[in-house]
Length: 397
Image (tube, rainbow, N blue to C red; front, side, top):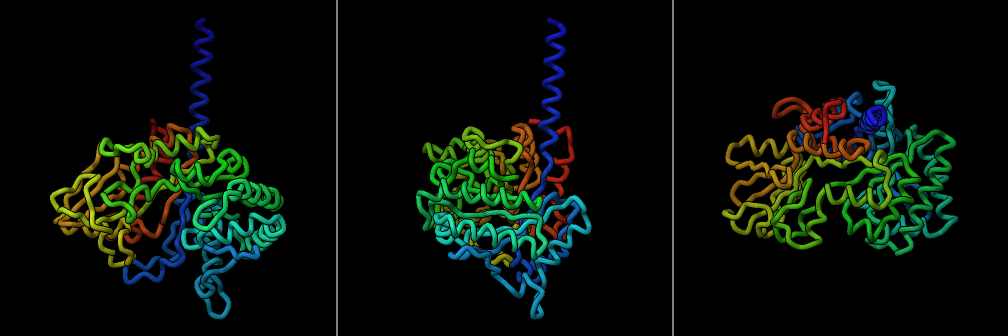
């Protein structure tokens, strides 16, 4: 019996070490439009430290209804006709980190679903797209393609998208394997999106990595304050559907549906969601709101603030900050403005959670939203936190 117990202990220890070794990826999305932000908000490819990533994603290119890959900003992406040559500069980051993989991400929210749905529903168009995608990746020297379809069977899609999405990924896999190229996806995280849009086990079998977009659980569509990236449900959430709008519920649902844990990346948001309170004396999660919060000076989008814009506001001294121990995420408020976000402390907790489940690492939207210039302390405080957790073998569940 003692020998058996010792064997089991050793086996479990080896299993834990194997799981820990899979927790090794930091994937950063770069919004190619971020260099157009005013002043200190302008982010250039030269601001990226390639030694802090295992993979980088260039966002975005588009898909056409005839199965082609569309360059969305020729001046910014290409070097022809006096362009900035973003593709070439981005892929040249590999010269500074020989292990780095650089992928091009196709889709995104603005691309919608209609063109994807049209292409995948027809076997000829699907094959055409796979051929064109391979040619595009090889032409511009990317390490693979990231498919960010938001979302199959929604936003103009069809019910058949669920099956056809897997067929597309399988064809990409077969073709890209011949060139030793990566195929990855970014997917909606919540149970409601999974039930509408994904064959989880089929997707997992076909791709190298799956970015779970574990953010935007609450936002401008709500009539009350709610965390953007909560780890757990709050007691203020009484409806059954509300209780699924958190990282714990969604990650476990993906695992229950057949996703390989080591392929899942915990999506992290380097931005916060903002709200305008109905009553400035009601400041807890679940409080009524009249709409989204004020836009930031640099990102200039109502309802959203980059992390460095949040730090700017907190530095003014008239904001109250709260760490929600129940949902394990901070929020802050001042007057009628309310914002939820992540900070190094909440990312530490999420790292322990992700590593405890044997996930593959982190994915970041987006690296240009961190305090990349060190305006309020060290450069890249959130990214450095994730790097430390990936490299820290003591992180535990």
